[in-house]
Image 1 (cartoon, rainbow, N blue to C red):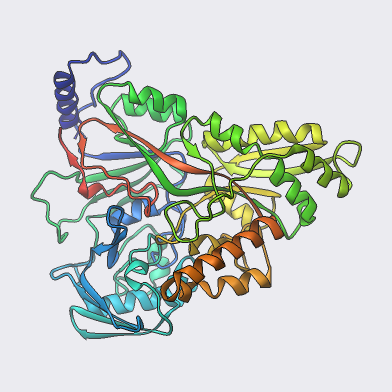
Image 2: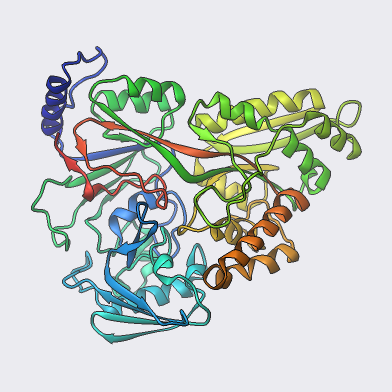
Length: 520
């Protein structure tokens, strides 16, 4: 692959007649691989029924779903299913499967395999398995036809495109699938299969092409995919310049500006469905006091941090980002330090009161979150509040968070499938033990609202939008469980010889590598 990329780089330079800066080098020869670089650990869970984190970036290349959300049509399109239909009442869905598909185990992917896969995921009752809650039964009409009967209407074609818990996999791969998956094995049908996994290593994961893939390998494709963990963004950029990386999923404003001006490097930029969230500990510590939570909400320099990130992010309005059902306009937060001071003083803290120390965790290597933390520390200090922040690898941060060991948990969130319910149903619905409800919010009134949403989203979207607005008010205002600093604008950089890259916001940070063409 390095020889091919070197040739591509040379071709790009000839076409553009641009001189390459000294630090830009041709990729070294001898390796046919697409190398994806990010700053977070890749794998937190191998079991496709339970996977619910960063590994989506890799697993969407290993596993497939019945449908795939299309960002152009904003509808579900074919993937493992070639067609589908719903009954007039929306309670029966029939999917017709693609012919000739096999799992990496060699077994056929047929209607029985789809039924077994989804039933096992439902039984897991963890991660995003809730997406199948409406399904009361699944039956197979013939080897290529699967029929779902629902307890209440949901957009099952959209559900089946979910980034999580919608994977179809071979449940017969092993008698003890949990143990089998935990060793870094897969049972997917996608274009790539797991070659090696080195937990905790910089070179964490390698995938290789599956020769029996239904899409075929006649045209040029990458045959190997490597995922590399590099927390230092400047080093990730240097790897790209040297051709040792093919794709860097996010660059800070300064590096992105350099990428825009660098011959032989391509960039992609567009709004995402990915939001930054500051979750406040409502269960233990000083932030159990509503006044303290509201004070911290008001202390965040929302506009300042958006300006500082220079186009890398946009202001958040409400909880759900624009473009999805559940988005609330006119709810952009604003800093109000006098109000924050008053609230802290009412709680016995603030200037002249008891000193307050708050702990915060955020993602190691995330320069945007680092900017947020610096500004918050600066603005809280005159209010007699000390912010102790700790950058952590995601897996370690998440484990700490599930033990309720911090006052503020900074993380990103994006939808399971393309609507707004994911933010509320997973992050703010009561959950014990917590999975992603890392504000530990337990509010029966909020739960009651959220429990009406799945059916309303199908039967009465206007009513669903009203419920989203009520839930937004409860979470942001009544409970002050979270602050929403920004919505991410995706900014990618990749080698100029790579053709066919499209950013799909429903699958955050995923590169569908099979669709790329490794030639200029």
